[in-house]
Length: 120
Image (tube, rainbow, N blue to C red):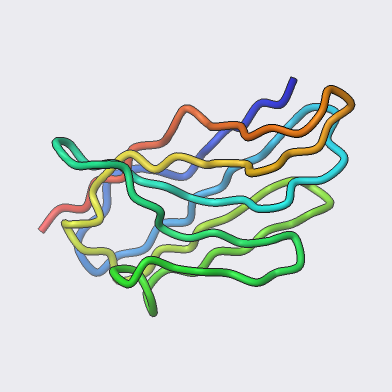
């Protein structure tokens, strides 16, 4: 079984920075893609950024130039550096492991989420 544990959320003023971490634990051979999603109250969940095992990444237009996703394959950990935060970034941020390969097979996993609140 794979578990994803996020950390690093909190309360920050507009213009500030936070760094989120998501560590995957378990008997993992490889995770093809790791991603961050977010969901604000009353809104649909949206993809923030994703990164493949080879390092290629994609970002939502709303965070381009402000957020940076990175990963450590050896630690099965993904990070999200968030700079110049805006109140509209307030949401619960969840980690997603896509095509995690374990002795049990291949499937996706989700973390519980971490709250990010940006005050104006």
